[in-house]
Length: 114
Length: 114
Image (cartoon, rainbow over all chains, first blue to last red; front, side, top):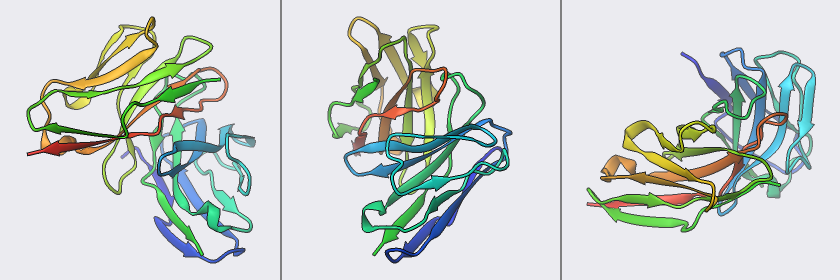
């Protein structure tokens, strides 16, 4: 089954404790992206990657890091989480560089930073 | 820069009534437009997309949307609401080549009244 998986689905952590949210897709997609969803703000892009070893900032990259060492994986790293990073996070992937391609979303990771 | 405005953060309709969710966009180039649906505790699922072919786009579950360039609109409609349509709906725009970023609206929560 074609899918985007994220782990963990739920995470409660404390300020400053480094964490990684994993994202993996089994569709051989070149493009992957991370979004955060906050009430009243919709989804905002954090980082994206157009291929292995190619990443760039989205609209809200502060406090986040990413890496793309393999085509299928695109982890999101919070080196020193803060309460304002409490949010619902989605990973997405799509087939190629043209904006007409559908983006496939993972199930989401709900992060709470206390 | 691209942007999306969804009028009405909450919409309620009776079961069997017409569903109309409004979306207006701005884009410096001919856009690609999408409607996604999010059911509780799930990721986003594509309902339909406009990619410069037919201006009336049909999607899943009897939803459709019409691209109107003169009005910069891409409103979502369904002739007859079903209880299972209760969800949050997001309109999104992409400018295509390069970053595949989807710029999302803030979402509309649809409630179906029995």
